[in-house]
Amino acid sequence: MSKKGSREERELVKMFWDAGCAAMRAPASGGATKNPLPDIISGNGKIYLAIEVKSSSKDRIYINSEKIDALLEFSGIFGAEPYIGAKFIREKWRFVRLNDLFLTRQKNYRLDKELAFTKGLEFDELLGKDKQVKFGL
Image 1 (cartoon, rainbow, N blue to C red):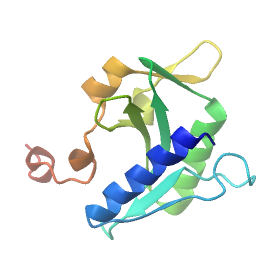
Image 2 (image 1 turned 120 degrees about the vertical axis):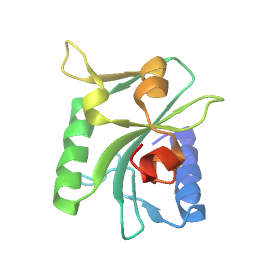
Image 3 (image 1 turned 120 degrees about the horizontal axis):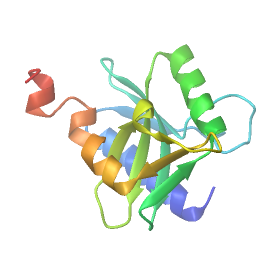
């Protein structure tokens, strides 16, 4: 794991705690174990999230299909909602559902900045704190 990726993960864990959710970085993510672990797990008794964190200074993020498969497997066992937490440089976090990702010809996944900002959720929306989400409008 790069220093930049670790920094982004720590930032996101702090945001979850500040918002009243328990959160932790999965210490064995990134290949230290064969178990399917996301980068971050978070929850507050009402919502449970499993997040694969990706950051980039470019307008595209590529994600290996094994990371997505592991995220889906963990989420299914744990009962969490799986998301890609995308942090584009100098932009706010966006949280993208896996079925919104673009499948490449090589059977990996791509997340474009434009898609992240049109279909991805903001942090408050992810937690259901946005009025429209909360009241179903």
